[in-house]
Length: 104
Image 1 (cartoon, one colour):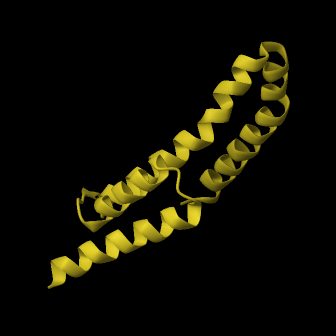
Image 2 (cartoon, helix red, strand yellow; image 1 turned 180 degrees about the horizontal axis):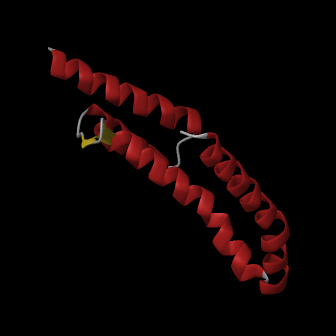
Image 3 (cartoon, helix red, strand yellow; image 1 turned 120 degrees about the vertical axis):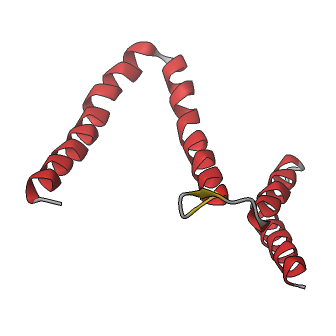
């Protein structure tokens, strides 16, 4: 990677930050509650997409292993409105149990 491309990426990242502070604040003020409601959902959807990608992709291949079972158990725990700590423990326990069963 050349220095020119690095500086272009730095300028682009800084430009996005400036646009977010200056441009989106004006849009948010003029559009009202609908824009705020939509933007409030963006972090949750991005986090969900990150979890899905990290769960089913390894070395640029689709992998369906014990992680799927763990995430599924975590989804069920969230559905039952369990506390966050319980969700994490259930997810880890199910993933470990499935991995242990595949080794035995």
